[in-house]
Length: 374
Image (cartoon, rainbow, N blue to C red; front, side):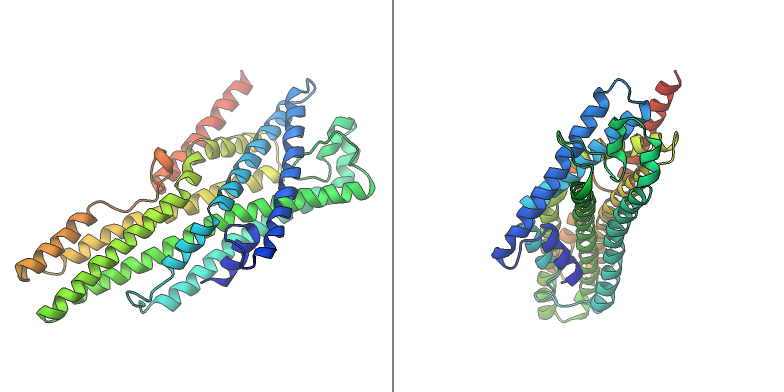
């Protein structure tokens, strides 16, 4: 078990708390996040309904609200699935039944590094973005003469509430809430991304271990050969059940990818073709990187699952007795259907799917550019 993943999983609500009395932390996080979200959506609606708002103001409001919807969606899904998510992670990291592969420790070290990089971005990018808006607060206040624009100053996401929150202690509190909710929701999303990458890497490790076991089957005598082959078949079924469990948990998480994420990336890129914006850069990089990680995880599972059939075919099964050869043939046939990490009913997470998302984002960006020029 990766301690970093488990600690962040508990903190963000992706995993259940060890101590039930700590659930007040989840309640507090929910209150803070949704209070900030109300301000973001209210501000976005005000901008879209303001006749004086420029095109870039409206574009900023659109991708901000879309991003907030996406992050809240991830957060609600993670709270709903936290118990089965922990169970799946415990199952996928358990090697007691079928034995430990020789490369387990080296692979766990690699997985830990990958996860720390993903989570590090989830902390650094929102913090730097918030720091930029705080550092430029005085310049922003001098530049925006219209009182309607003051809410941009000091906040990563523009917010609005029907009371004065822009001065003194109230401003500090609302700035802190804005920063915390952005960092927290980014951590939730990237914890789920890191969780998926970790599960995929462990599945790849298990498949490699299964392939090694298959290569040893025919080196044993007839009795041990049958027992080892039965164990390999159980191992294969176990791996298939783990992938099914991953799809049950997170397939619907990935469902908005082809539509919502393409739009968010496209709107951010459209904004950046017209004006530099730190928030747009952070969001575009975050979504592109996160979606790539999810699709790369799906690609790993897809490709590695096909190697089981190759390993079984290379066993020289045609020289074995008829019963053993028949069982090996069943493994080969089952392996013709690769294991897939799905994006709901819309497709399979893979590098091809990632290309489709980016193509959709580019299409949306060019469409908006053409509309603006006309």
